[in-house]
Length: 117
Image (tube, rainbow, N blue to C red):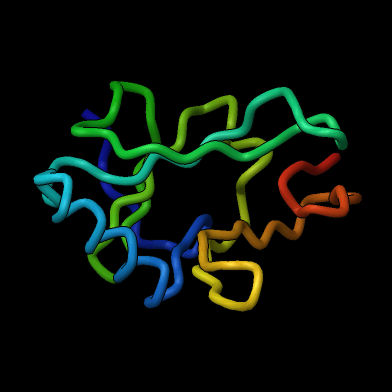
């Protein structure tokens, strides 16, 4: 199994970690072995989009980054796009949700759901 990395290669803010951990608890997930998978997939008006889902445990070749008690699980192909990113939780008039602040993107679509590198 992959080792846990606490560096800032990919990280979550305290608020994002707290929100995700609360959701994991509601789902009855073990935060010691599970985490939030963050990945990049083809799609969206700019070409690539982020995906997130809870995982009970990482795959053999995943990288795991832990911040504020939350384990972020990232597959090797997504790592090329996500390295240096910060997972944030934002609330506002448009609703609350998770957002990836990524220094590697060239442009985002108007809704902020897809990007191009």
